[in-house]
Image (tube, rainbow over all chains, first blue to last red; front, side, top):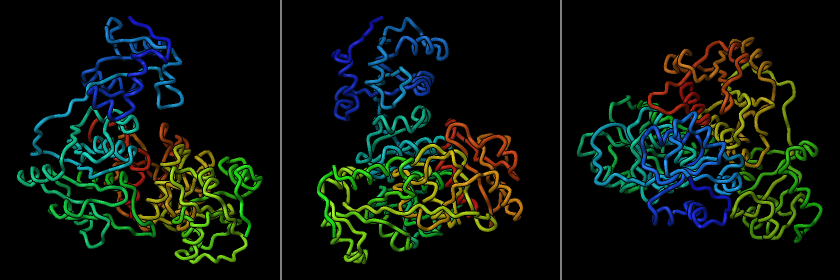
Amino acid sequence: MERIDSINNKFIKNISKLEQKKYREKTGTYLIEGFHLVEEALKAKRKYTFILATENALMQAVASLGLDPNDNRIVLISQKIAEHLSATKSPQGIFMVLKISQPKNFSFNYGKWVMLDHLADPGNVGTIIRTADAAGFTGIILSPRSVDLYNSKVQRAMQGSQFHLDLVVGDLYDAVADFKASGIPVYASMLDPRAKELAAFVPAPQVAIIIGNEAHGVEAKLAELADEKLYIPILGRAESLNAAVAAGIMMYHFA
Amino acid sequence: MERIDSINNKFIKNISKLEQKKYREKTGTYLIEGFHLVEEALKAKRKYTFILATENALMQAVASLGLDPNDNRIVLISQKIAEHLSATKSPQGIFMVLKISQPKNFSFNYGKWVMLDHLADPGNVGTIIRTADAAGFTGIILSPRSVDLYNSKVQRAMQGSQFHLDLVVGDLYDAVADFKASGIPVYASMLDPRAKELAAFVPAPQVAIIIGNEAHGVEAKLAELADEKLYIPILGRAESLNAAVAAGIMMYHFA
């Protein structure tokens, strides 16, 4: 088993670069950290190229996650490297480099979906995916202009739900056309009291909800393609709801 | 009108220290930033000791917020100081130092309330308060162990809702006793399928909901005092919902 002690090691430098989207795209890999996410990735049998762990973390992973200590993808790292790679103040000392695998030619013809139109905040995107998992949704479609799914903050906020759902980066116009062709109702979430109140909708076995950008909402042209525009009434004096909270209220309404 | 150009100025150094809770408590003041929050504070006629603004921001505030340019609490600051004081990358150049005013001997005998039991994440607390405002709630009671209400991240996430609601830092046991004495039902939000499903509750004109710490939930002793324990069912494989999303779903259920 290889052991690396220096943060100046070339391999470690390359792992660090996975923080950058362009480097993730170049290598087709991304980084996650912490026991919970690594456990979920192992359970979901996701393809990985490396597991980096401190000695203590490795012992714990072998004992509690059933990690095979002879797995030749394991690289031992020092505590200092763990601190260097981690996005948190108290790293757990375990990291995994996973292969990005985007489904090709996905067809949206069943289930409950959320479409994210140009969502910008990583915490919002991660939280929406976690909530979609809790609400029993099938998957999430992110427009290409949304924050990158493999961003470390998005990965962290998903808390493992990234391994439970279909997560697709794709054109929302194409997805809406697919849903409509399959008879799945498409609803655009609006901040507009002329839209239909959420309470007027009944829970449905299949549904596709579009959530818009935090500042600008759903793109007007895309919203026009929806079967209905819906909104959550603002009863007090707030100007709007947080996008993840609004998405959560809608998903549980249709759950 | 005083004008300050150096970030080493004693007054500016003291304003910077408002980032620390102990200094906010010592001075009985806190700092907010940005046009929207300053506008909401002015509208709500909150007591302030200073407005700090760059020349451009001051012109804009006089034109759009109706700020009196002769207000002797205005201090002109340089762009560099604005960047120094700001918690954001692109500061709008306007700050306000407000007086902390906590209601004394508050009695909880009407309306819709959320109690936050040891909430730790500033974004969650701010988002819950913003959502409570949107859902037409009366106010929020934060346990003293919760993240400080005057923390800049909490203030930012509230997006002005801090000036629309009653925000009280106080003992939750006392508050629960008040609610129960007034006949207002108290519900503890649990992550426990033995609790009663949210859908079994009907919207009520008055209600008090306890939301628990992100990792540990509502303190067991406190939950026992509630009239009912309730939970939002997890239909997929997520372990839990984000606290702010769960609070949002509950508040809109009772709205």
